[in-house]
Image 1 (cartoon, helix red, strand yellow):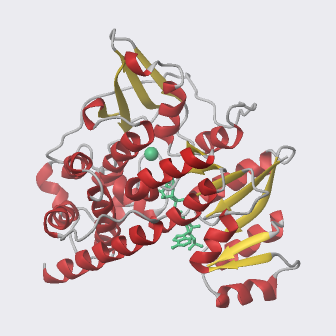
Image 2: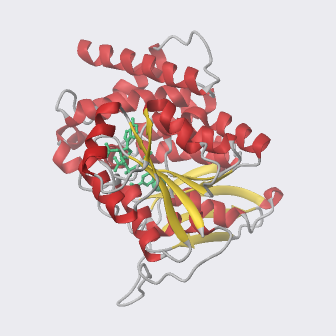
Amino acid sequence: MKKVLLFGATGSIGQQTLDIISRFRDSLTLLGISGKLRLDNLLDIAEKFRPPLIALPDEESVSYLAKRLSYKPEFFVGDEGLARMASEPSADVVVIAISGIKGLIPAYYALKNGKRVALANKESIIGGGFLLLSTAQSSGGEIIPVDSEHSALFQLLQKVKSYSLRKVYLTASGGPFLDWDLKDLEKVTPELALKHPTWRMGEKITVDSATLMNKGFEVIEASVLFNLPPEKIEVLIHPQSTIHALVELIDGTFFAHLSKPDMRLPILYALFYPERPNFDVADLSFSPSLTLNLFPPDFQKFPCLTLAYSALKLGHPYPLILEASDEVAVPAFLEGRIKFTDIPRVLEKTLNEFTIKYKPSTVDEILVFHEEVKNFTEEMIKRL
Ligand code: NDP
Ligand code: MG
């Protein structure tokens, strides 16, 4: 029986992880959960799965839950609680489904303790991937990516010798504005941006998919996770979201990874790796027919992609700056304070104008630096 710690149980990835755990009750059991604001959801999850460990942001949330629960779990509080629960010795797999840079805390401590980390949280890889990888290497921990494209690449690259690899390709649905004219993007409203054509996800990542910032982040993620230079990573628009990644070999051969767009598949893979359990609830259908389109993205229409490559080439801490700035720009757009087309403008301005006084190298330094960039971006937006 594998014991699973699930950070971010109340979110989109969290819920889908719980679905997998429910379906595989003979092999998986929930050891611990965390949540932040959706306490009633967390309460329901706790009652259903009865995990012995629960991490919460503050004492108030602890007493809210403690009063209503029918059993007595052990509570972990605040950032320190995230670190402590992630260090729990009896855990076999630690799923990091928290959104935002805070995901770095449990990811780092789980790896430091030599655990397998099923990593959905991309902010931690973008801002602190170097730290996570070196920690995993020295402790014997391992990162299994959950982001669908990276799960696909992880699977494909196992079959390829690194010297025979020419390039990797990440696919992007293109988002809801793929066919819009550049000049019309000014008029995009939050309602329109929140309608993703193929995936159901949290709000932040849905907007990032519409600007293609998400794909830009994924280029950075792929570079860090698989140690690839920017010129070996390309993006292809693929509206059907059926091919998740491709690898091109030096003789011109391509391998592709296909599946239905369903995040439960990469979650399942990360939980069971290297095994593959029988799972037939997300099968791909060829009836009536399966059409696959693949074409290069329009960098002019989606400048966030260019920004990601620039940040990647500049190296640490530029990807962290880009990500932190986006964590401010996206809510500002959703609250109607800036236009959709201002998002890349704000990000570019932050990349160019934020003064780097030091290179953050520890978890605490990365979190503080991230906060400094967010404050800088917030001030800049006020002046726009
Ligand atoms: P959601 O917004 O749906 O969920 C986020 C989860 O994190 C919630 O459980 C939330 O708690 C918790 N959380 C948020 N902020 C904090 C914090 N500061 N401290 C502790 N917990 C916090 O996000 P998603 O599930 O969509 O995404 C999660 C991560 O996975 C992101 O990094 C995203 O980029 C990545 N990802 C998601 C994909 C998807 O399909 N959804 C695909 C690939 C990657 P609460 O709700 O209780 O406040
Ligand atoms: Mg993805």
